[in-house]
Image (cartoon, rainbow, N blue to C red; front, side, top):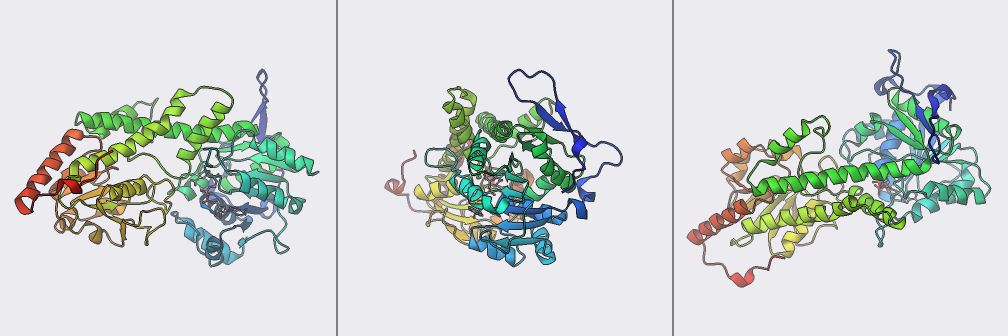
Length: 506
Ligand SMILES: NC(=O)c1ccc[n+]([C@@H]2O[C@H](COP(=O)([O-])OP(=O)(O)OC[C@H]3O[C@@H](n4cnc5c(N)ncnc54)[C@H](O)[C@@H]3O)[C@@H](O)[C@H]2O)c1
């Protein structure tokens, strides 16, 4: 590792009362400053990096570091993920990741093993990106992470730092540091929370808005600052703060995003009740510079492996120190309400018709990923079959029936199979291929033409030209009217429906 960045850290030494001093990297804004695209590590800055956990965060970090010239050794417990990496394949779906993994494995810059053994190269920096899922009590489970850190300590004699990339409770790094010191090791423990979003993980990792490093001192932080400067160039701000602040920044950022999404969905439900297009309201709201246009798109509720668990974790952290955060505590109930509103809208529109066959488009929690963790689309699919609907689900990255999805849901391999004979299309994930379809052609094979687009991603003109009745999430008037129209069509063509066959709405 080079020590070239010693002058990049400056202590912000304004009086700060009881708080520890902050350090901040200066941005290189000269014409010579290196951009990420131009950056590649030189011989002197090529560290050997270990990455524990080759999941969404770990493999992305590993592949980008390797692409910039680092020697990266992944430690991955899941044999399927290991096999894929060994074969030069990305263990997860993420745009742009596959070629990076293939090239780095072929060059020998990216290797993988189940555990640290004699074949492992000596390590300069050890990253830990092991999952910290929500435990039964709502708190993140950090046991596997801690075991991995402590278990590998004897092999880290030549390394300069342990880097916690996983999202962990405030105070975690300090606890781990104390355990490590008790074992006689003086290795630095750094907190380096990750802010990438699935679906854009590689781009986000290569061009982050900022890098946050939590450290006990600027000396401890320096090797990691060097690695990021060598990987990303000089333009990316690297903010060096205390470990505790870094840990809190991650939760605070995700809670802000979740709060914004929950509120946007509440506004969309209100707009729908007045038959106002929420996009008209939200784009005008977002035109205010103080608010900005990002994260203003309504949807079926947020999901994924991070936002729900991180909001829950932060609520419990606040509770643990007896601090009331009523806004934070209302985020998850609001998000749950949105899911109920989606199902209620579908129920009112199609629930009392004769066939109740739904083509559900999308199962992943967002487009661009194969991840089904806490996916609102999966919740909708499961709730619909529980209420007696026939559901055919199609997702471009879900080729077979996943365990998260109720067995009564048919997972089909084409959009045509999903929509054939369906009464309604429900769009649950914003895959661009859904918007690109020839909807006039697809509509010909449907029994009834109802569209409930929870992502507002099918162009209005296409849907109208194909003859769809469209119902917005939360527009009870439109949903009831659609239900009435469909039942009238049923009466004209089918025998009367047995009311006893209809499960009650909750
Ligand atoms: N997914 C995201 O978008 C995202 C973004 C920012 C932060 N995070 C945080 O990063 C962490 C990792 O998230 P993820 O989504 O990459 O999780 P993941 O489940 O996709 O990956 C974790 C990997 O760790 C492996 N693993 C578990 N125990 C291990 C051990 N002892 N040794 C080696 N490997 C082990 C698992 O097999 C798995 O492949 C979490 O704390 C998460 O909250 C995730």
